[in-house]
Image 1 (tube, rainbow, N blue to C red):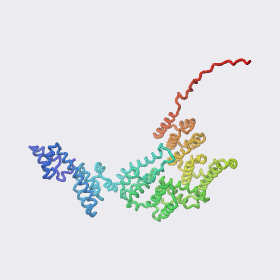
Image 2 (cartoon, rainbow, N blue to C red):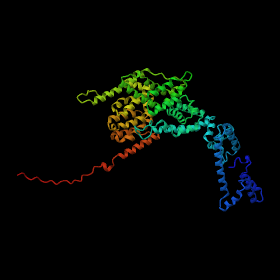
Image 3 (tube, rainbow, N blue to C red):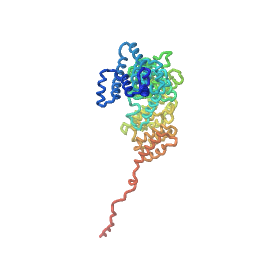
Image 4 (cartoon, helix red, strand yellow):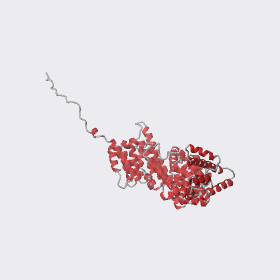
Length: 577
């Protein structure tokens, strides 16, 4: 409590204890101690007895004076940090720190010492080491001081950042597995600006401040974790962090990050959920502008493009472009904007391989993706248009053309072997589901059982699919639809992929009342958790079981109620005359 006072020649409690132990007249000794160490103000000598008459303890008075002086001192320190020439103000603060640092462990004085350190751009290394060595001091010091400690202690900074990164990933997963299923509000609904107001992004932004070294450390953590886990949410955080610093106009960092302008432009596209012609030209300019010898920047650009929000925007734009091309009778290879979207999708999807191999080259685009797969998708759009027009014709003019039920073998093969084709194919299926196109959905659904890296069973796709399926809720009453969806798709992966199990249970929690009772009973049996199932699956299954139990009719309702009508007595018919 009194640490450091002796070094400054100020008497403390220990001195008073020693005085009282060795004196013959304690009262006189106390009076002398008070005179020597009290507030040296002549007029105060007459005021203190007046406070005594009012029963105000001397401790309360001195504590009040002390608190007031401390507040004045804190204000003065903050003022010194802003006035005069830079060298002069920092010299004053350094002198003040030198005089006061010995009291840093004294709780009542500590805020003043910490305030002085906070306003110093470079605290002496010796003092930083003393703060770092003491857990309580480290915890009490301002983030401005911690930044100076962190920039030379990557392990310590990593310990501070790690819980925030775990929290961020958990928050993303919680959204994907939320029980609130809707096609209107999904994972991609919040705007970029709203997302970066989140707690983790704001805390990281504050921890970094204007310190380029700390920013680089965080980016290195994100790259390492992305490589270790393949979790694409780290790519989202990389983009959000840069744009959060952009919002605060931290030019010290934004000007040195070569991805800044590209990310800024892409951020505007993500906000609109579409890449328009003007922004497409800008994005292409950034990619074409990567000079020889600076190819390493492609690693960071690919990570920005691997952000699921970027992939979502690029894929949605691709589907929209394909629809436009059908109306214009134009082939995919003749559309520069479409080719650019594919180029960026390819760069984003190749992020992990590029960072892992450290070979910074844009992935080569497969010609067949443009010449075979995309025209195939366009043919599906034509099939839909043809069928829709045919259905609107008067009955006498209708042709006997049923909706195509077979899938071209090439389509299935592309979804299995080509990552970009698979991503675009999945987004096309999401598109037709959102259009309530049951025929097209059931036609293409079998192709999803085997896809590149099981992308059809990824959390993001299943989150979006379950949301869009709510638009086809009435179809769940049909045996054919449920068999195709559950038996033909979901249940093929439930036993080997717990995340699929969770998404199916989420869907049934939302739509169980639409499913036929017999089918619902068989699904309940098929989805029963095993001993190896995680707590999340068991919890969802229990919730579903409770809901189904509530829907069952009570025994009283099931038992046939006896008829209240009395039998009429038989009346003999009169004999015919």
